[in-house]
Image 1 (tube, rainbow, N blue to C red):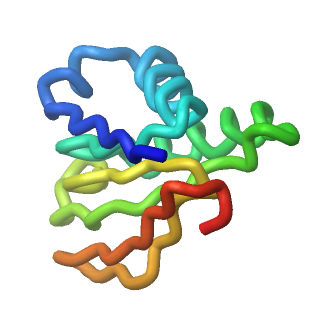
Image 2 (tube, rainbow, N blue to C red; image 1 turned 30 degrees about the horizontal axis):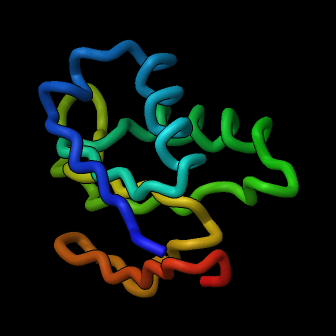
Length: 111
């Protein structure tokens, strides 16, 4: 089995509304893809993605694994610099700090 990774530019992410962005991410992850978003998601968008995902869980889709580099604090809102989202059955975050994410991605459905 192959592993497909979609690398999405910050311009593409910014061009979408919140609902469109979450649908885009979840559709890709449900197809078994790992999605990497330059510019990342806000904390609120991550929370909405998790809520939306919880409604989609069934025997075939066990959920998502999400990780991101924390942002440098801004005046108005915090946003991650990079967000990685993948199927929970394929991706497991091992280690994460402000500049490094280490993850195991398994081509089989048992990570």
